[in-house]
Image 1 (tube, helix red, strand yellow):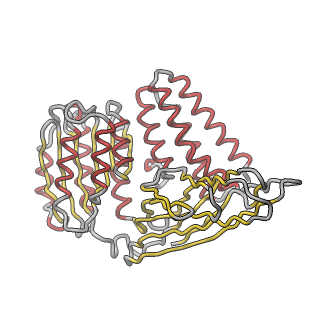
Image 2 (cartoon, one colour):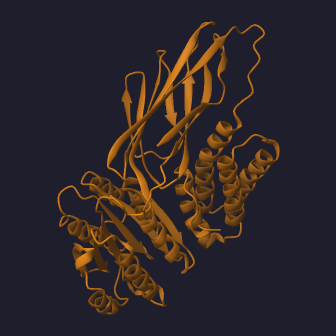
Image 3 (cartoon, one colour):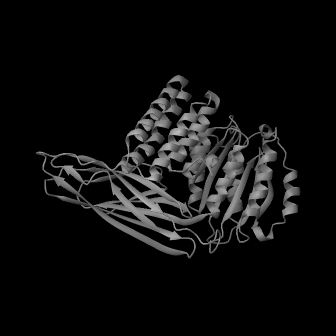
Length: 425
């Protein structure tokens, strides 16, 4: 594992408060094999089989799930649950090596659309399957739905609370919404609270990309349980993470955040904002970063630290140093999540025209950045280009699909996660 911490500037003006952007880049090692030494993992597919899942939706999901289970390690575990207003277990939690592929296909062939939508019932049935896992085995619950919850718990807060509770038992929740009729607030709340991913399959074929990405993330994982501890050695400093973090707690003179996992060879930047109190000229402010993680290939705990110093200079004659373009751009990229949230709120409030204006303005800001920032690293430039292209694509959506795709896009932006539809492009 490698980490590289960078600050927007290395000098600030004395006797005034200052804000300084911060970027922590973490690079995972490249695994020698995809699955060597990986600990076994449990996967539960929880599938909405309500009547609206007809028209080929359910057939595509069934076929994709069958194929994905075959890609898991023989040591992994898998289960399949379907729900409408009742529950059906198509595959009880079992080690993949013991699952009969032909029998599973026959069982899934009986999975037809019917009834209403009780997401709470389906989710809790999936959680019951995770309880059958051996002690210490972590699990991912993948919820697929195309509709609105019309029985059981139906508020985003209630269902998000259930997903949050599951994380205490080593179960993450990822969600995949299909079509334009599902409740994106429910699905994104559950994924956020459940420390998982959210994907909007507005087009049916996108469901395959979303499911494949979830399994790829498991198979290609090289680092997990990544945490970042940041400390500043002056009283009164405040450190704020700009993206989504899975946990955030105070430590002496700073914070420690939980960042999740990285795939083999993946590099990702995590942005923070430092609010520094007034300091006297001549003061040196030391910023220390410690990144810790579990390396999958050899189950080894790894750690990397770095210290940078910010010089407080006399206000007389002070000239702001040239800003680190990568830090500025990464901070902007993370702030796009809030910009997309504003556009979503405007669209949901009935002002789709204003929502589009927000996206157009953000797109223009990124175009300006790409044209004028000459020293961006390839990784950061690629991220800004991807975000700019994604904003352009959002403008192609109508009012029915805009909220779904923008919510997914916002979710991924907050995690610095690429669009799986573009994987391999």
